[in-house]
Image 1: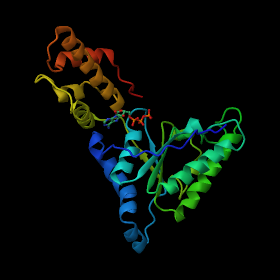
Image 2 (image 1 turned 60 degrees about the vertical axis):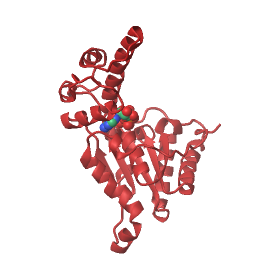
Image 3 (image 1 turned 90 degrees about the horizontal axis):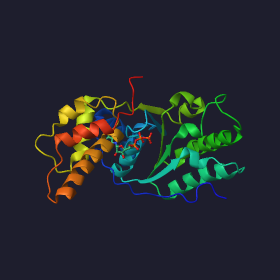
Image 4 (image 1 turned 120 degrees about the vertical axis):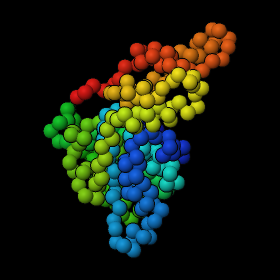
Length: 269
Ligand code: ATP
């Protein structure tokens, strides 16, 4: 039994413009990932060591996966996504083998971004583990060994995401490992305006749709929630269009109704 049936190499199509808001995170990622890939020789000549691994943390749905994909797209790299839980296996040796396989494929597909989502599931700190911790220990060790070896293979960037940085094994955060940690917060008003713009770009909107007003009323909504809200409003409009057999745009009352149906996923805590 193999843990990962196959390692899928993607060519992502997410551009910086597809992510609303978060300008400073975009800029930071550009500098720490795109630059080392594009201008490796300048880094070498100046003796600057780029970060090896980047950890994104923040609540679910704020766009961590989108950031990782955009990094790959914008630096012309391939993309391999691995969900932490996929690596877990009760078969001795299989999980480590899967980790080795991921890095091997990434080296072959370089330049390549490897993205470990839900990394907390494979790398919880000692003491917080329930049941058998052998397998997570072995996965962490294999991961660290692969990352330590990356110095020689340069064009592979390792990114990871978690909602629970507090339960991560601190060994992962040492220099030369995930040595850059970036917090992706829930979107503020300005980011929500931009996220609404991204998700309504292709949608026919009525003149009464006020994006600033919508952004004001969506405190606690993540990017994923806003995407769902727009989809809901559009579906409500579509139902009317089909019922009436005549095309009209999505209007503010559709958004009003959608706001009642799609709640925010975040609370003030
Ligand atoms: P999880 O922790 O649940 O994996 P995540 O932080 O990785 O969540 P994504 O999967 O990247 O979140 O985002 C889910 C969807 O929400 C995206 O595909 C996109 O449609 C939308 N979304 C999230 N953030 C943004 C954003 N800043 N701009 C545009 N769309 C966004």
